[in-house]
Length: 368
Image (cartoon, rainbow, N blue to C red; front, side, top):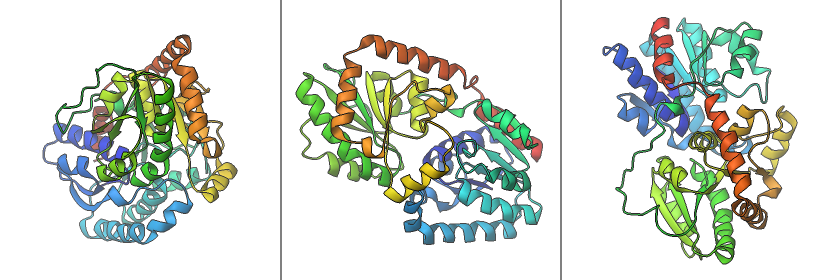
């Protein structure tokens, strides 16, 4: 049984499932996930497209859906008794699933660690009690788990396995046309897009007035409703290209991306694309986060580097004018962009070598 509550976990889980099947074709999978896991041959019991949330107060709007999914997951564990439970990130939900598995004697592998080293560190006690093996993608996480005597294996980051994003709708739009290209990455959830994209559209309009021929590309994740993006962009006074599942193409072609916080910042780092990270949640979630978060940065590129190599604009600083001013300064300073590309290359090197999915699959098969 595999549980991936978010779009990035769905993708990493699909790579893992394929790697496990390559080692043992007789394995059968079921659980919670999205289109990527479904295409990998997993029988999806609950689609995760409506489960992911950003922020604590935002989770309340989906509490009924999450509780229903949790109830079904627990029923499936009791009825099917899988040989292994694989959990991917999504800790508030997944640790509750793990508790049921533990009572039933089902071994639990956790792949992609929750960021407990960043906030709510007290959860380590629950992980130590409920998880049989942590499989981590950042090297610094190994020392953290060893300190707490949690069995841990570093496999590298699965994003290195397949950094190319296949086009699903051909390549009618030409990313290599004339004019500077700036990427707008508002997130992999509809709520994120609704919160951040309107500001990004205003940024695009400001930059269009100051830079001749500038173009803006918006890669739409498979977990986002394209119609939501089109409705927000409609009427915007800039040159927009809306592309489905073309993230890597945009990262390769853009001089700069303005991006939501999340896994996508690591994908930009791997591509070596300079970026500005923006992050905004409800006032209550922001206040609570300020009380709980123990690290100085929120962007994964900065967290991995352990220093601020990429600018972050958070909450009240997420305004079209501030973002546009910063973007303009960066685009006019080639030395700064070159320095950032070099720093991002170092981040990529720290993520290990390709083959993370296969190494994680070997851990899973060992647990079987």
